[in-house]
Image 1 (cartoon, rainbow over the protein chains, first blue to last red):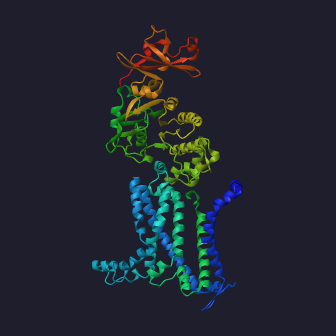
Image 2: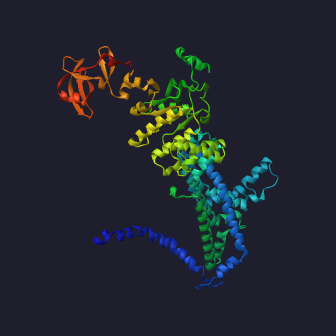
Image 3: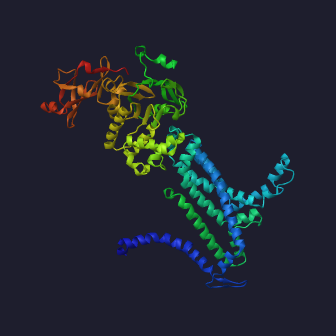
Length: 287
Length: 341
């Protein structure tokens, strides 16, 4: 036993094993299982272990797949753009306009209060607001801005993206705020000393130095949106689909092999997207 | 303009240099606290001036007001005949070198130096050429493509210097520029700063809390304490003839002694040891410290005052004293400077 403990190779192996075990059991193993199942065969009644490319062939052969992937990217891109603009603005305000740390922390906590309730509740709470006879429509009508209710407020792509932005903006605020707080304030004075105006400081100093935070926020938002299915279902009123819904429909129909194949393709797509994003910015400093 | 003309002493009214920087009852308040209390000073042109004082004395606030990074609560700052108190930093004719250098970590050395030209919209080729010239001045041509992180402290400081100088300032403001360096480098860099100031022929205003740094560098020293200028003048005058107890103690090398007609500052190296009766005062030796080139002898005189005497080692060892010995301490009347406060 003592020998075991003093042997550096074994002791370091023991030290990494808990995390390795957790990752193996809860990450690697499920993915491996999904990969295996994605090659199985399925009929209406049964699932047969096999090694066939039928599921993938069907997936890539169906025009629905491309529409749905396109939709997924569209949601991700628009949500990303909106959360970036809002997130950057909020983080900038918190980091550079609020002078005292107490207020910074207080306002930052304020941003997190919506997260004390569940995703679903926050999403559903939009429904009475946006609905045909909802608060938004009735208010606009009472003001005389519109004569009849706007139909596209709820159960539309607009509603889906609105909910996404609402749900995920904080994931953009936090990393950007974190990076901004690390920017030495004297850099801004130095820029001003060199004659830079507000816009030039933003473009030449703050944005370049905030890039890692922006990139981390981007990864959060893109992966969350691309993997989501419930928001799309609720907010589009089942009228739009993304890849997540494709998978969830397959599961509902007990088509596990087909769901697995779609999941694998989605996983690879997300990984490739992140891989491309990481080419642009080095986030190691932030970790 | 008028204000400045009024403030120029009559004896000095013949030739007024244009490049003078002048503070006219400049005040800085933060709420109820006064950080800088109505200070007046006229900086000599083309000179090296040190703002010296303990932390919190208002020296940094003064420098930052001159630079334009702190608003002036009251009074005005006049440079080159124009009131610059409310101009943005870049339009003042000053440039600042920051304490931690504040180099842009995402830009190469060359782009850091060329930053202010980029802000002015100067073309890439031209601004890079000019930045290269500046880098040559501070001897950093070889490192132009490095990032600040890849430089040593001394090199970073020179980049900061080049970046400040490329704006062609009339006055260069340095905020504790040497404090981030190790002692060896500090001494080397202060030599370079002094040399550069002479070569460029512009004014340097340097904030420091180290009196040795101030003495080594400055033509003029401004000693600040509690938001006001305690004493200002040529380095030798400030050291040799302190006017207040604070200056005498802060500059070091002085005894502050209470004599029947008031407080006096006497340089420790002006005090010599004699026989008990012959000296100006009598005392008992309390400690003797050998310090190589000289010996520091402390003695307690009447009124429980400690007096230090810095004695050349050969003189001391020709007639050594030990703790407990009764001795006399002597100094020339001309070495005795009356203190006003």
